[in-house]
Length: 585
Image 1 (tube, rainbow, N blue to C red):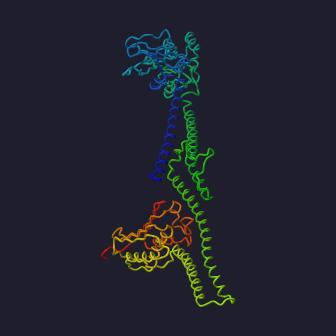
Image 2 (image 1 turned 180 degrees about the horizontal axis):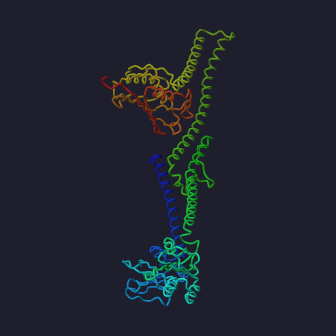
Image 3 (image 1 turned 90 degrees about the vertical axis):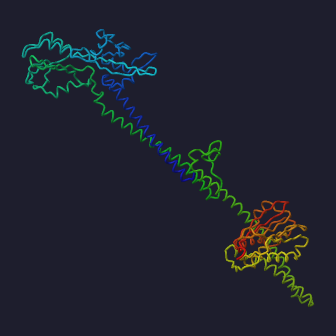
């Protein structure tokens, strides 16, 4: 997988991970809000819970069901009671059940409790819940009762039916005073005809107000109940203060609770974003910072990867493996490592080139000084008037001076040629040349050279008719340089073989191989470097050190390739491949 795909995959994965974290925070916040609302409603009035909420408050132990402490506290605070019965009316659990509430129910008897008739002593709420059973869901009924004194007062009021304008019966007044209750009576036209402790009641009956007063929400300032008497046409309204009324609870605090929760959710999301942003910045920033530091080191000439305080590479474990946040950039790190290695190698190579160039300049100076000394000496001798030189001596002096001058001219031409090749300034005139015959002639000429004495030089051509477009002068220079190098740097008795063959219909190969001492890795690596002089100390090191570099550049200029194989003690083989004209053209 390339770097682009890795980065896309990494960023998409982290983006969805970030969204998942935000979603989890939101879900947790909403769950906490629901739990808080449920607890608030439970404290205000247990009857406001739905079956699913109440089922969460049940506890099961050794096959028995009960309720938790929060439910019991809510029941206590409302002076109520609670029972759990099965579908047949059998009691499974009871808490604060008064004597006037059945402990066991006949079939259908519990329905009477749940129906909340007008004279009931308790407000009863019921829920149907599931109880855990092996492989089945067992149903149960939860009954919750809270005192309903307003119903008892209404029953007494209906029994007394105080006349309009008449004094309130003492017993009825005592009952209402004891409960801190009030009542109001309205006639057929809805006008207030009588009241007790209810000066705030409207003179005209307001149906909307009456319905709101009898709202099912039990967390209200007053318990209110109304009855209509068909015989007299009177409407009786009884109310009493709600002893369990909490102004800040349940519905009245829901808006505030939701607002607080959303503030909390907002704070959680902000903290999550900051944390995720910091984590993301560190996860992405550390690898980027490491790359910047690495590039800074490279710019300053330090080619090693930066390390941390512990001495390990930044972003790696103790085992040397990249951490996950760094692994996605592994391709970049590999490229930087390769670049560092290349720059380090180039630095070392540059040092070697500088050193070899200095050695070459020193050697070249020596090579130039030697013939110059001869020229200077012979010129001085010819200039001297102390001696009379014969014609033969003058001719010998001139020949020596010419030979030394030719040698110096060759050195200068080699130096000039390598720079022209390097700058692609060498003009070449290519023409069709029968290369087999040309190479055979060059080999024959070198066999007759004094340096080749004692060497076994052979030539072999597997194809006689090979024609190539080459510059005759520079093509000859290639063969001469390679073959001369093979002769000069091998001892007498070494076998040198020159072989020409077709590599393909449109290319041919020239192999020059010897069974001499071969070359070590360092010499082989620097063979085509300018200024480098190979060979051993006991060998002749005269020359420019440019012969092999010139040969390689000329091969390339002819569109060819050159390769050298050599091992110490196993000889050397130089293989050159050139394009040629296919046979028949």
